[in-house]
Amino acid sequence: MLNTGISYKLQKDSPNITWPIRRIRRSQVQKVDDVVLMEEPLEILINGHRIAVLMRMPGQEKELVAGFCISEGYVRRVRDILLIHHCGLGHPAPGEQPEDGGPPESRNRVEVMVADGGFAPPEGNDMVRLIRSGCGAADVSAISDSLPFLSDGFSVSSTVLLRLGKAMRELQKVHHKVGGTHSAAIFLGDGSPVHQAEDIGRHNAVDKVIGYCFLRKIPLGDKMLVTSGRASYEMAMKAIRVEIPVIATLSAPTSMAVELAEDRGLTLIGYLRGGRMNVYTHGHRIEIA
Image (cartoon, rainbow, N blue to C red; front, side, top):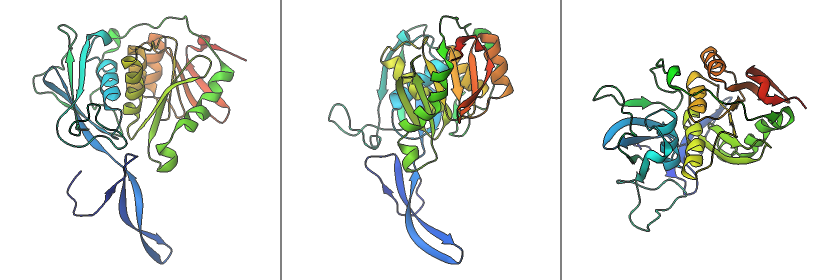
């Protein structure tokens, strides 16, 4: 945390801090403690190369890094990851304890060991991406040619899809308590949840649920991804790269996301809320019921 000179309290079981504020209502001023979401940097190193610093909400660091490295193309295949080590000085994420009972592990640095030939380093020796919580990377590359074409083997009922927005919101814990988080969830074709994650960054939330599945060898080719944030080009790219056939957002898609989804065979759904949805691409996977 930055040294602001202001006294705050770190909550033990949640990634929040208690911060002193002045609450003003009309002409009345009240000094109270408010709950604020934590945002901290996470440095990622692959085979000793510092590739990115993510601004994120502490928690599920290994899942976040695994999902980020695969969905962004830094690691070619899941089996190429030999080790993900959460290391250094600092404290564990709120509510988490070190696995080995030793000194607290850092929540701000993760080292990844990748097999020979499995690491695709960024261009330029000193190129490090700073990825802020509100947006993805600043550079949008012409990478669609490297993405797979998705197969047509998966289908889902429209009735199931229309329930997923409400189902994801019910899984949120931090948002219900504090607000201010994005959410992402992986669902089976029958609407059963596989995993849900929250973060201040919508890309981070997606990487956390993808990483969760990777680390547990859960296949994604027959799953659906639901996210609270808008479906941008990068969000569609992540889904396509890991071969998720259906992505739905409670918000809007962008033009580049729609174009990429159409080109690569991704079913893209927007405005999934209030018993309705807009199907932008490849609606053949949806069975109207």
